[in-house]
Image (cartoon, rainbow, N blue to C red; front, side, top):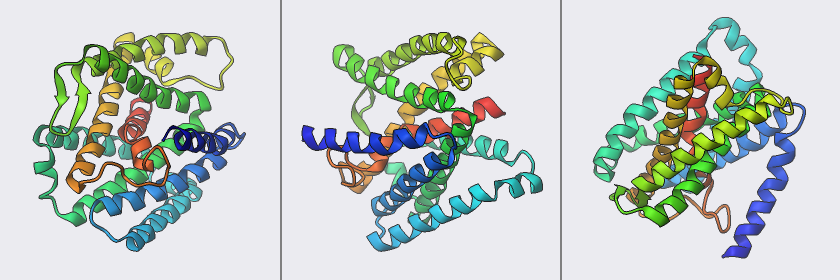
Length: 282
C-alpha cells in the first residue's frame, strides 16, 4: 500500500507544482478544475447516483466554472462585489449546516432529499474551486498559507491525538478524532502563523499570507480567524466522514491509489478556502 501511495503523491506533485508556480494562474486553475470535476463525480456516486450521470454533471460543473472564469470581468461589471457576497453565503452555509450535522450525525443527513444533497454538494465544490483559483490570483504565498494551515493542523492533530487523545470529538462520525488532536492542530497552526509572518517580512514571497493579512488588521482578529479556519478544517473532514458513513464506504473513490479519492484528499480544504477568501475580502 505504501508504494502506490508514494507513486500517486509524486505523480500529483509533478503536475500540481509546475502549475502552481507558473507565471499565470491559468495552468493551476485548469489542473485543479479537473480535480473538482472528479470530486463532483465522486459526490454523485456517494449519493446513490449512477457513475455516468455523475460524470456528466461533473463535466457540466467544470464547463460552467471555466466559462465563469473567462467571463468574470463581465460579472464584475454587472454585479460589483458579487464575490464578497458569495464568500459570505458559502461560509454561512458551512458554519450553520455543519453545526447542525455534527450535532445530529448521520441521522440528520440521510433523511434529506437526495436532490438537495446532490445540488448542495456540487455547489459547494464549485465554490471551493472558485476560491482556490481566486486565492492563486492573490499570490502563491497566500494560497499556500491556506493550504499548509490545513495540512499542519491535520498532521499535528494526528500525532497529538495518538499521544494524548482520550475524549472523542465526534465519535459517531469519526471515532479517530479527539479533542486533544484538535487542540494540538490549533497550537501547531499558531506557531506556523508566527513563523510565516517572519517569512513574509523577508520579501522573498510574492505577497502576504493569510496570517499577515489578518495580523495587519489586529492581532486578536488574526488569532480568532486562524482558530476559526482550523476548526472549519476539522469540520470539513468530519462532513466527508459523515457522508461516507451514510453511504457505507471507506473512501470516496479509488481514483488516487493509496489515497482513496479526490474528496478524501481535499475534504478539509472545502470550507477553509472560501472562508479564507471571506476573511480577507469582506
